[in-house]
Image 1 (cartoon, rainbow, N blue to C red):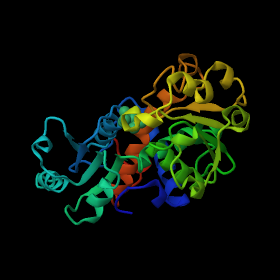
Image 2: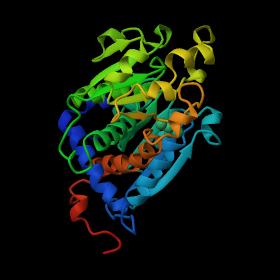
Image 3: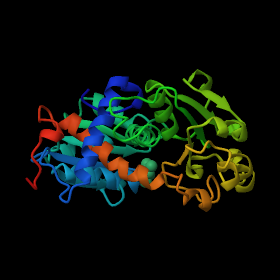
Image 4: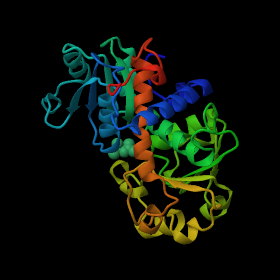
Length: 324
Ligand code: CP
């Protein structure tokens, strides 16, 4: 593939190759000098029309670790505020010599449009579009689950066949939920969505997963429980549950976490709203992988950039590092 737009576009073998490549990249991060020369001379622009902490900074870290030249663009403070379109913005940046565009946009479909319109020749990587997709988030989540539930070395070459993953909360507005359902299904996991009826999208019945409204009954059957942020900024006030009623039925606290099997982990893509979907006790517990997910995000993004831009460069294990 030339671009990464949707987790649904990945085959099982594509996804396992990315996870295995990310394990190789993680070994680079363990070295005293963390850089590889793989993308020397290539330029990547991070084109962010929506706010981000984790995705933007981890893409930048991944690009720099692969020795790419990095241009950071945020819509705030740019000529977008004067009415410049996505097409003109992208063509302006490409004119400066860009090989890849990492794009986050509030409009679902913006990365697809950029990749297929013929406006630019660069590789396009979706860093989250509207309520549609966030494929690198799903990949880093799968990477985290494989490591925690199977093992770092034992997991190599493997998918998540038979693992039971529960995704809880505001599915309606969540590109993370959509991407995870697509990827986890491709990797053989059994996914259950738990959400209030008002925070489930129309047509969810056709998604490759189960739906439940009973979190307490689902927790004991879960290998991983992924809590979603309640996205008030995308929410119609008429459907906005009160914090208290939401937490009572769908929030994860210490008592609920105790219902999970001992080996099961708690995940969250961040940013977390502590007290609403997850208590501080759970967020700060050993079982919560939220910080680990961020670290794994750098390895996954290195793997995606390497596989899309590295061309015929040798695999990282055979590539000379700058310390050699
Ligand atoms: N998980 C995630 O996409 O976080 P950011 O919005 O901070 O990038």
